[in-house]
Image (cartoon, rainbow, N blue to C red; front, side, top):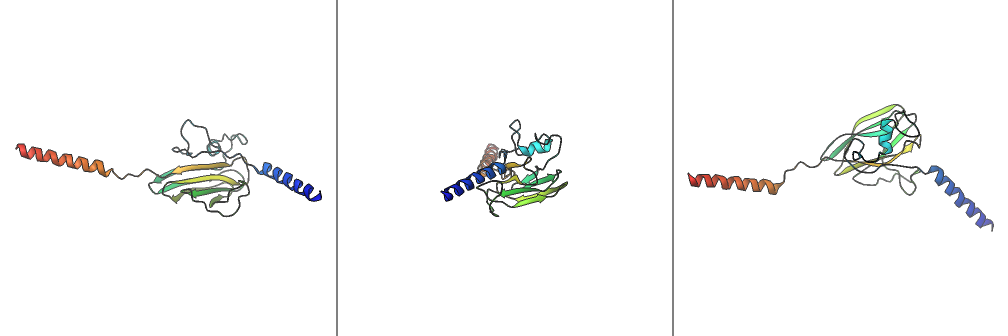
Length: 184
């Protein structure tokens, strides 16, 4: 009976710890836009932090990440933390997990590579080489009220011309030249 009682106490303690550490992370991977969000769609905590509309901390700039630029093989992002305390922006490139150990906040997940910023700091123009996208979340740091789930920033579409269309136009041009020469 004593073992059962201790096991029940442990399970109950873990449930309370989970509830107290559970984070309401918001954010979906829907580009384009500076916040990786479709215009007119719901706002992520990342965007609310930038707009100083975080419901817990209104009228205060909170940690956020902004789209800077992209090429067909990279994404450049700006990281900003004007709030008190440390902010650790985790990232993953093309969905690759980096597993730096068990995540203390997002249960069942691991800590990913991260870019950390101390109070009142910014890191602009961070280039990530990627084939498809870079996901960023803020689940580690001084306060839980400004955290957000994965937000996706995609590389630029490829600018390689369609080879089939180009060959068709070339063939049409050569046929026209042949037709004009024949008539002359």
